[in-house]
Image 1: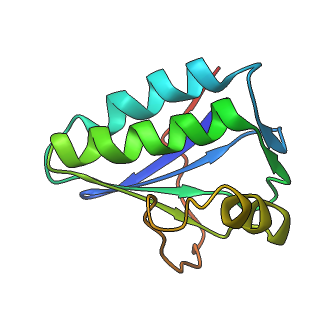
Image 2: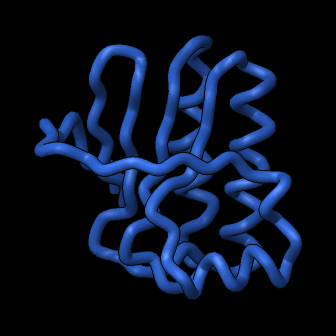
Length: 115
């Protein structure tokens, strides 16, 4: 489900072979992201490139992980957000609740795939 690569204290994460973050697998994604952000000082960047839709359970995951990361003194940021997802974030007034960054990923070594 998640493709994870790590370099030092930075983890890059993206959804693998899906273009939606919805109820079907949001609990699994939440569980896997929580494990990553539990490490104090880690920076987790969630690449949303190619994700065309996020439903309310998916947005709940993003908000929950953002807060969970703060509690564990780590960072959780979103990058490469599609226009469709940006529009949903604006409609739901989530821009102030989530952290964003601009990133371009170089060729990466894949640490693991989690299903």
